[in-house]
Image (tube, rainbow, N blue to C red; front, top):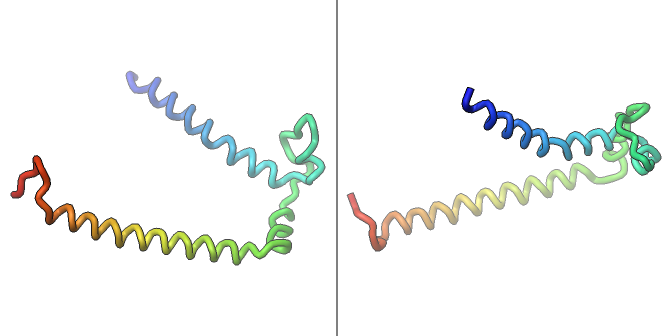
Length: 101
């Protein structure tokens, strides 16, 4: 029971962090007129699932995905390589205040 306020606070924080994703998803299902309408339309009417197909038709989304994957793989490989080299160097060196077992 003592942890209930902490869990409630974490749940509230999670909902706040999730809100932009829910808003972006809701906006992606609207027509352009509903998207720019003032005051805003909260629920799309009608729901336009064909917006996703339109994005794939108008942009080289597959190319964007491939570029992102190349960058991600190279970044992870570079990070693993450099981190392992630095870790090995730190493990083999004698640092002030450290004891060797």
